[in-house]
Image (cartoon, rainbow, N blue to C red; front, side):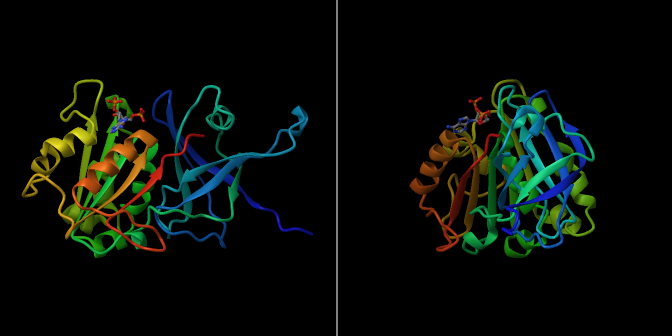
Length: 265
Ligand code: A2P
């Protein structure tokens, strides 16, 4: 018999942030291994009573660090989205399909050693940083880790409590996070303590000023970055990084920055 392509796991908890965003966690199969920052296919079993034959699956960044007991995901809710219109209704105990082959480029191994690691995520593009920033490796490889989250509205700053408080009490990375982690939220469509797109904050030099970094541009010698968000955000931000001398990397050839589109379910 052919081996099943997916694990069948159980929902452990669901948290709704807004009418457009939610998070959930599922059980982790003992044999499921991944690197912090990777993504995997997630789905729901076909509803046979409706004549569905195949499951609907989409790629999701894993928000848990590689050693976590459960697997956490951060998702958008698309009203007519084939998967998320149903996924947003899941409850504790429901079954979720989990792909067997996690993969991706937003991993520490794909960036060259450096001093500062900038993690730029817009919208649900924050998801891989939930994983990377909770992994002690990030702090042993970099002196400073900056989690930058860009959203349209203040209420979309999901995980604000994690990055302003909870992570500092984490038994594994709490001390490191206190000393090395900076959370850098920015909002573009309403008043907030910081406003503007990453691209504008980089171009104007405000990013560096806000972070107390000398100079008004990236330093190819010391700065590394990971990007996750819409195609437009990635394209525009990557162009700026390249213009400032950073080179894109991959698993096969680590570089100064790596990119991945945030997946829409
Ligand atoms: P803006 O409100 O100015 O469009 P989205 O939900 O569309 O993915 O947007 C999430 C965040 O990413 C918003 O703050 C949005 O800003 C910003 N954004 C969208 N496109 C780009 C881009 N090309 N470069 C930088 N930031 C972007």
